[in-house]
Image 1 (tube, one colour):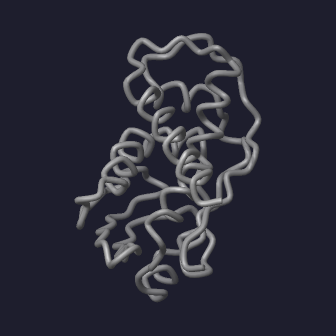
Image 2 (image 1 turned 135 degrees about the vertical axis):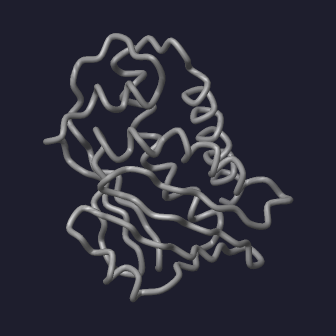
Length: 173
């Protein structure tokens, strides 16, 4: 597989309230917490929950919603964390996505290696399902900590997305 994610099981710090989902993620996970691992054409890339994913979550949820729309054909996203900075252009090719990346920075400085591996081609359903692993971990932890969010828009959208992904997976069995 050219694209997969291992969500891990990062330790959670107490967080009673936060401005929004991104703020909650930054508060709940310390920099020493276990990282998620994104695998791009067999190259592992670390994603820090407390930093990278806190920065990415506000773009991740709308991206996954867009990819699941039947009329989706292509989009671009800029991942703007200092330690996971990349521009991804995604184009639907039948049931698959071709993800062309321009890598700017990663933990471990593997940008050249990643660029040399080329595009990732993955089923759109698998792409969404892989990212859903991380969202499920975050949503579960926010609910487990009973975090009070001032702005819960992205959080509620993430929950709806996870419900839709779960429903699609049950429908395939």
